[in-house]
Image (tube, rainbow, N blue to C red; front, side, top):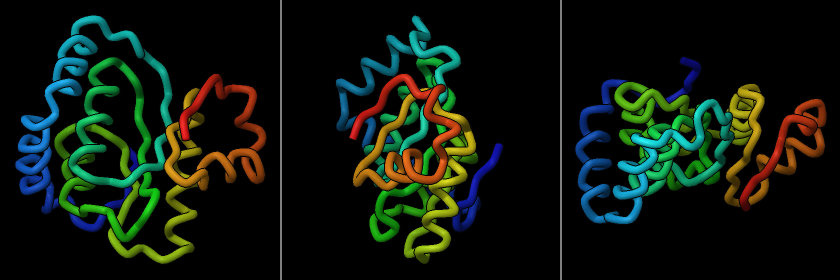
Length: 149
């Protein structure tokens, strides 16, 4: 699975923190359980450019359990939680591109890596993903059916 995170050895701590956050997020937990049974997003390719935190991790896991194929990058490198990024890759099978404090070149390389997944839906916090899609990756636009910002 494509990914670029600081260190996969951080995954164990990330799993612990993601699990803790899940206990504080009962609605997402219920959605995740329902999605795991019904698989309403089966095969849907989702590109997400969001804060890589325990809360976002639980959202990505719920979407994955619903059948979506997720590619995630950081919308703000300063908020990235490296242990969470590692856990998403190593334990939850979410293709993640995020390193706390990454430079601008790395940031946009990560945005491009997420777009390389040929998304059908986008989730964006800050519009960098959508701007890149409309400015530089227009060949992908016919396949995009929706998005959030």
